Length: 113
Length: 113
Image (cartoon, rainbow over all chains, first blue to last red; front, side, top):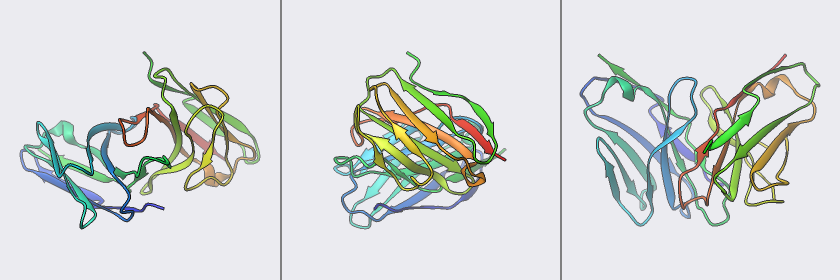
């Protein structure tokens, strides 16, 4: 099955700086890569996703890049703000047979004032 | 619309007791999932369903059973609870994996003593 590795497990950045979280996946058939944000005590919520036919996608201060050859994808957050503090999860799925999303172990992003 | 609703939100069980967690979605989604979340382990798939009357095993199915008798409901059962099943359980649903967002319920915090 799919295996998703996520790094780093904790990331501390100064407010206003950029943050980058990286993930690798093992199944070359995976074609859907979402990112979820989970605030303390809350449910995970989708912040951005990318499909295998696209190399990059942006949504305001958030961007995701995908390198299918290397089987890795990254989340980029620019101009970080205190409300960006949360745990971020990457995930991968091959769709089709739908065995669900395989998640990375998460990155705790801390924005230092 | 309520989205995805889980019942109950909290529960304490004694070892060996049984219980059922209920997940209900009002978005007419085909796919439903049960995940467990443990510190440092991310979200791990327990069981999933690709439609009414279907169920399939995920990454960590042992000790759990599921049923999907109605499209909008997905039940997770613990027949004989063990302390290792202490966790936060999340239900999620999606139209199709790879074709849109997976929406999560608010979570159920289960403690087995």
